[in-house]
Length: 263
Length: 142
Image (cartoon, rainbow over the protein chains, first blue to last red):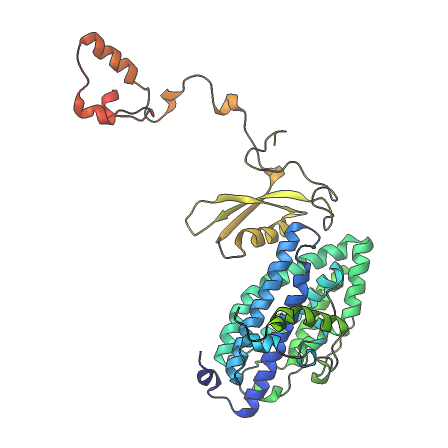
């Protein structure tokens, strides 16, 4: 797809808002993908090791196609790899929810559950105003369905297990709850995105739908969470966490070892 | 399942947490056998097995192990303990001749050869090619 074809029909404010939305979506998938891939080799059982690694790969795959779309839109000479790897930690726009490290298994499952359900609500908010994104999202949603199923299977088991499993899981949810809604913070220029049909509904509506869904899942398990809508200003931290700086050092290490090399 | 009914499969009875595969997510990890279909219309073939605490996670793990690269269109997952196994060779491979149960019927080759010897005739050459040792029915056998 040529840059010209993906840019056609968008005015400058809309294009700029779209670029911000794509970057946030791509960074979210990229960061959780890399973070969860840390379980490779050390997940609770072999089968879960393969499952979690495969899900992490899916997220990196989603990040890749979103970065590619963004590269075409920006048309500034940077390709998907440059967008993914050649930024300083401060320039990443991942949600605060993903600024936490993977923690223990309970934290990872809590984060996956909160992210997968919120991401699904965000993907369901993408309209058909910009066909390249609409077509991509239709494919991504087919894969994300499984991620939610996997997360829910674990939520149910950890919550019903009682004992240490439930205690750790409930504590992880509580620790992540203040940052979870940041995934669904309204993007800058949301009005233009709605006007262009790139967004089919405002993120505030996506947030309300997501919160109802989360409460509907956790309620029967006897877990209550406080989830407050996030604003764009609170989406990401101006100063990334030490967890993210460490992760950034990991995922950029190979790229930085020989800048500009062909792999 | 019989005590030694593991010919098709390579793992034994249910595995308790802490044993072999480490702590399970709850309950006892059990082997589930996975059958996969490569494309619509193909037979279901045994693909392998996974350890899981229940059918739901077994399906998730089967998906990751046997179709994460898109190599299946359908999976069947069944608890190994629910599979009936018959591997008694007295029942499956009877020691006496059972060739009369084969679609080709009795193997007549030796009897026919003896009869030809007695009659002093030779085997019709044109039909020699249809004789084989598999018990398959050939015109010259009857």
